[in-house]
Amino acid sequence: MPEAALGVLIFIVVLAVGLGFVNGMNDAANAIATVVGTRVLSPRTAIIMAAFANLLGAATGTAVAATIGKGILHPEFITFNVIIAALAAIVIWGGAATFFGLPISLTHGLVSGLAFAGLAVGGFDAVNITVLGKIISAVFTAPMLGFVGAFFLMLAVYWLFKDSLPSRIRHIFSNGQVLSSMFMAYTHGKNDGQMPIGVITMALVIYTGNSGLWDGIPWWVIIVSATAISMGTAIGGWRVMKTLGFRVTNLKPAQGFVAQTGAAGIIELASNLGIPVSTTHSMSAAIMGVGATRRFSAVRWSVAGNILTAWVVTFPACGALAFLVASILKLF
Image 1: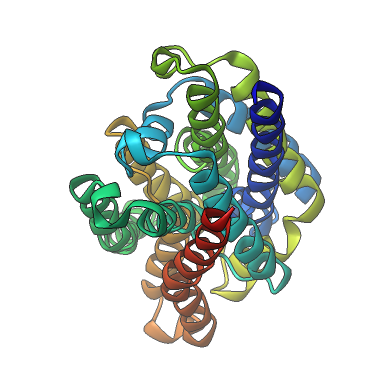
Image 2: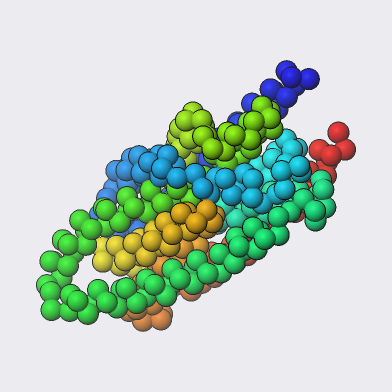
């Protein structure tokens, strides 16, 4: 039995690394999309920068990992089967969305997967409705704050620099966007990047029976998770970066700086509160917000509509996949 349990633990770690890799291809890629879209940094330089910033974010705050690992489901219903079902659902859905260049919320996909896998195993008693309600409310408030905040911040920048030469504005915000891009990638690691950390720690707690691991998550878990995200960004993140960096609206350094700063500020706040939010939701909404300051038609709403559709479908799709896999595993 211990050998079998160890085998399952290793399998879950492998799946969690897969989750981190897909997360890197999708969520982490959109964290640096604007700095690439404005051509302030090359894709390679942006990816290297994002890798280090993601690692730093993952290492400096694990409140979101704790919420994912021990907040969505009641502890007595957290099993290896539930974890495997949730991971399988998000890896399949996230991989498909990334292939088609659609930015989705892998964070909320995992949340949905865990909730529905728990539902399949233990019914409604398995799900912590209070925590789940807070996460679902953030699905709506985070993009709304991202759009509104970026919109008004962009108007303030226009007013402050209305008498400045375009070359001076570009110089200032090109340098500023490097910093805002680092901040965005950092907050990604502190929030979205917590998913594989939370999942692996869940499995370790089940295997060892030591819930005290949540008070001191092993460093190897953080490093493995952050590395998987960085590799995903480096290998397959260009499709999503192209969608957000070039297709939603035309970006200049000032717009890129404002979008990243606004979105990253929201994500940082949520991370400190232990609330999983989506880099995709926040970043996409902020890009739309800065684009709308020029004129409403400056945003390619057909592209935005595709992104919105992917957000909406992610919840039921991941939930249904996880419920199905958990139900099958329950038979064995």
